[in-house]
Amino acid sequence: MTIEGIVLRCTRSGYTVHAGTQILQCTLRGNLKKQFEFSTSASRARRVLRARPEVFRDVIAVGDRVRVHVSHHGHGVIEEVLPRQTSFSRAGFRGKERTVVCNIDQVAIVFACAEPRLDPWKLDRFLVAAEAESLEPLIVANKCDLNTPEPFNEYAGLGYRVLPTSVVAGIGLEELKEKLKGRVSAFVGPSGVGKSSLLNAIQPGLGLRTAEVGSVTHKGRHTTTTAQLIPLRFGGWVADTPGLRQFEFLDLSPEEIADCFPEFRDVLGSCKFDDCRHASEPGCAIKEAVAAGRISERRYQSYLNMTANLT
Ligand code: GDP
Ligand code: ZN
Image 1 (cartoon, rainbow, N blue to C red):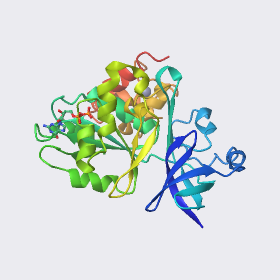
Image 2 (image 1 turned 135 degrees about the vertical axis):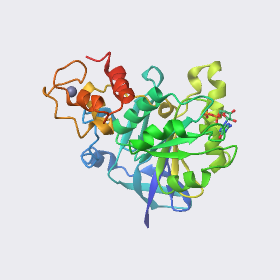
Image 3 (image 1 turned 45 degrees about the vertical axis):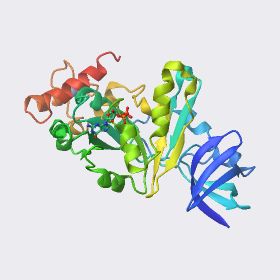
Image 4 (image 1 turned 180 degrees about the horizontal axis):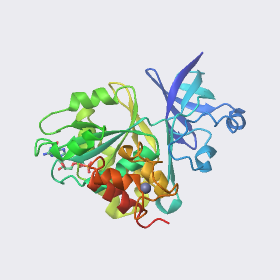
């Protein structure tokens, strides 16, 4: 009997797979490794097309959907790896560890309505990172008991999903569960905005590791843990990985960054010069759109900040 599942953890000794209501310890069928080297082309094209071949060196990564032959109680053999939809990869501390999580299909970007006050420049960077990886962003405006979510209106206006929540007042938590249901989500955002609190509110115990890691970092950096998916009791998974928390974009060109601003997309391609960086070039359609009020000054300035030191 084979059943479909999702890889929660990869260790030297094997793979933990969540299939239906079971958690299975699995090994890999012997000849699968070879086969898989030729079947990576099915991955969905990312918005950023630059090749990152290291992603594909992993036969199986956390988040992979697999078919498992259940051999005996609690154990199985992975017979097949289904095509990856997305793949997120980051080098860890001093390149020692690498985070690879596949098939994340949503990034919950958590910021607070107050304490700390919304830093839109920072939120823009998280959004660009999500767009660059083709991960659908969900902006969570937490601590809405302290302030209205009005600072987030700008983002709702751009078409982003914004969900006001409050762990303290119990607002938006059912809606958050609804949005996480059946999906693989990553929680990112600056520290202190309430990521652990939110995770604990939707499933007690879930935010624990985040808190533990945070509280021991002053004792040294060797506490970093490897990537894993945590199953949610109401359905769905949350990706828990240290690399994900530093959700910064890497190696993006100005052209790629511009494409990660959704309000730029209709206008891109109308500039006088094909290689326009939308900075001081004449005949720039982006600058015209800013002057006409169709693109906000602030977002345009954010683009300039992100591309200022790039060649
Ligand atoms: P993290 O660093 O993003 O994981 O943030 P934490 O979950 O550790 O929360 C940081 C602080 O914000 C803690 O003192 C929480 O009690 C507090 N906090 C979290 N959520 C809320 C909320 O919805 N409202 C208020 N007023 N405080 C919150
Ligand atoms: Zn331009």
